[in-house]
Image (cartoon, helix red, strand yellow):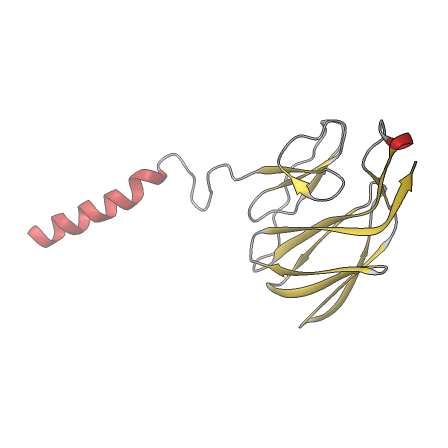
Length: 166
């Protein structure tokens, strides 16, 4: 009888911290990532589109404060999302954004499972679900190697050039 009481106490200690969560749900794990012209950051870059990430869900591009409901990823996959852009800087561009999106650019992803392609949207953003593993992501001459983990979103910026103005 004493053994059963110990087991019951252990089970209760494991269940109590998750009280209030429905079966299979997680606490809020959402993150909003802004692109600042060179990298994705959590700091708000005013006026720029952002990508909302959540464990187990497709990343969502947020525009002008609008969003749509999160869509679950296929079981056993992770997400890849990113932006294709041209970096811009210089005196005459001081009041302009630090980058120009590259809309409708082809993005190629190569890994152990073969090759997949997608196109950027009008803001230069792309996303896709992939099985876990290492991948080379390429757009034009720029490429990056990423690791996809189950249920997580990996963000990658792909620079297609640099625009300098005096």
